[in-house]
Length: 307
Image (cartoon, rainbow, N blue to C red; front, side, top):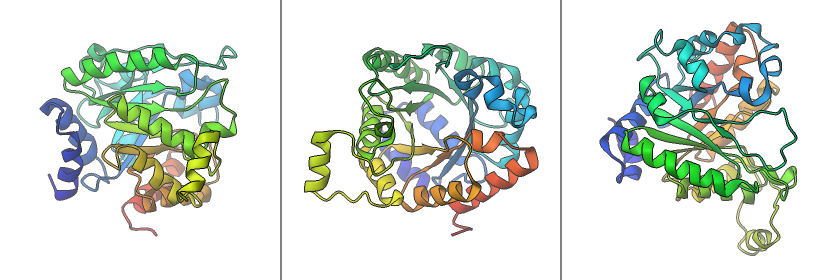
């Protein structure tokens, strides 16, 4: 274990050797292994958004084995997916890449303004599939958030007892938040803090905008001149909000976007002290060759090979 990975692991001194070993597995895997940076491929969108919206742009994506192979060929640190998708390929690709079982999911077949995901996976299933971690989504701001927090507390306790790492998708959403507020810097920073307090080893959040949603928070940001003008500054503040950088914070890639825009966002994450990216649709909604070229550029930016 090199100095950078040792430093990161010192942030998790209370965890048992199993959870720590699985974190090291993720941090040391792939082309960014040992750098302290992460690029993870998540493919839960078939459940979350529907199959055609997710895979019609690249029909190879309907086959769950495609995503295992893409993550491997690209040199990602890990692959995250719901139960069914992992069951389809876990045996074939056993030991080849760290897996993260997404243990809850939400569909879009209703107009749920205050979402509550269904629990769709368990620690026992993660262990059976050889996973390194379990993943769980919370929606800070939802009227259902307390239920999700309690579910996560229980899952994280069980996962840590079993020696797994815990990855939390912390996505503000709810009827009391504006659409702009879901990615406002004060709200995203708050979401990162909540995930850290609930025991996450790795925290996934959306890239924050400069918008300030909460009136009382806005006063504090303005009074203390918290630097949030650039995306890199906002990334730094979100990382600071997760125990002053003592929790791994990665940022989502979001909906399919122009490549150069994504690469600029990756540079901002890198320059702001973020630990990396978890990029789904921008990766798998394109042909294999294009996807590998795209992920190669993302990884090279994090590796410092491209400025």
